[in-house]
Image 1: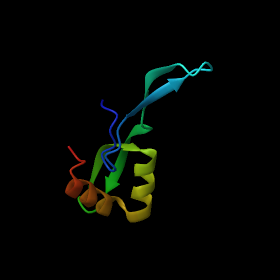
Image 2: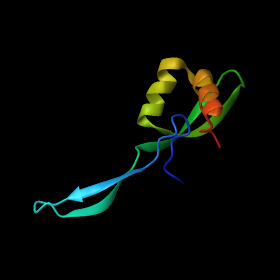
Image 3: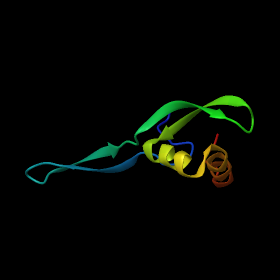
Image 4: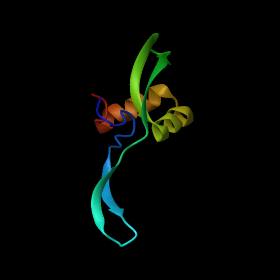
Length: 78
């Protein structure tokens, strides 16, 4: 499972671990993604999405149908 949110399109970012002596090594900032099941009332079906914590807030704010339409328009759904 790739760590990409299907609603917002967020994926892992890269950065540096900085030690006490300021030595820098590469690291990843992973996205907080979970696989969740949602009931899609318009289609009368259960769907499974990989969503980030921010994606869950988007679904709660604008609704599942609007979030799916917006994600499809932006190309985040696969």
